[in-house]
Image (cartoon, rainbow over all chains, first blue to last red; front, side):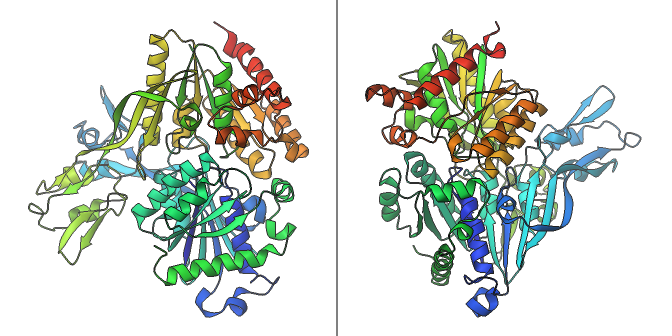
Length: 301
Length: 300
């Protein structure tokens, strides 16, 4: 079961929902018991949280995972063997990203523009091109008790996040509940973090900005044909727009989290809701069960 | 001409609300919404669109099944796993979402059976607002090339400012530190990083500060909702000073931000109309004065 948590608008509470859901599931809602004994068969064997908001990953700040493995991630970029190169320019012609140029008698590469398509290497008649790597960032793997955790951290200055998101997603374990914290927005990074999920949980706030960006996120989910549901955060501020829209779109509202200064302040210190208010564990477990029901029925719509 | 770009690292810290407030305080400026992925500034600006144009982004590979011999070379070459076998129809098909637009399959197909049409990836608009002209855009859902569209709207904002003799562009930036943010800040006169006093706010602001340093853009830092956690506010401001950033006055948590947003107004307008002169508005005015009179923004 893969649940991707997304939002359109940033700062609506994706990370809050992802971390609290993961921790509640891992402990089965009752403390330190493992999920297998509590929620049994249908839930599979464990829980993992993949923080795919690689530009600004935040889950670790709330979970303090023990990191066991750290790996630098690279994307392939061309390296040209000038001794073999005949300056035929075939590589320049195939590259849509202007990452290779011939100036005079030199071939110049611009690794930061390269998308790693391998076209230059495939087309070079002299086999003068090999590949080296451009650092995308790091992928870290660890645990929080029995919860498996991984995130990607993009190198500051690196523009392309989808390849790093794909590397984090490649750690998805089968037969596990995988919770993905997606980046905000509706363009390629978010799509990369949602594609192939069984369910998309959209977190929004009931304000005009929240509603506007929610509409965009719902369009994205429709393109991907993934069932979706809504968490309304700070549900007691703002206006009725989001609820009216949810009704009209037949989008189930699966959880509402009130604006509570206690929640906001404990969040600001890196505390989970379920730590500050343990009674919330059962709400997050119910959230999971509702999601599971929708997925089993083949979507709400 | 000066360009001030408002970014944040973390989303939802109040970039757009502040950008709009600045717009209502600034004179002779052009507004630019560079958060093309989830643009919200127009909700406060209520722009009258005077012209709209297509944004032509990348290209998309399309297999012509009549010419295709199903040799499978394109599938082997495609690094993005975007070409799939459709076993029912016994044909090869390109997944539009996965296609990177690299054209490798197009160039190397032995039958020349792959077309490569340019995609319309969104729209951009020239508008008039009650505060001045505005350039904004809408990136198509699930589209790539957000950086390219950001570059386009900033270039158009520059042209517009020149033609209207405006000496200032105020740009609302996207969250994060990736492609669209990099495209938003390159060559800007200064950036304002709006941070919130939370563990994630501090973490993300630090990355935004490093990005600004990487591209050598002078930065200023403003903490919003500072009273939610005065300790974290202090940490953010200390970090800002240490990295040689201008520290702006901090803004308290104030529900008036949401109230004014619901009415489609900037917080300054909302308070003016209600005859209030709140502390929050006073602080925002002061922040704006500090920005505008800062050496980097004031120099000719």
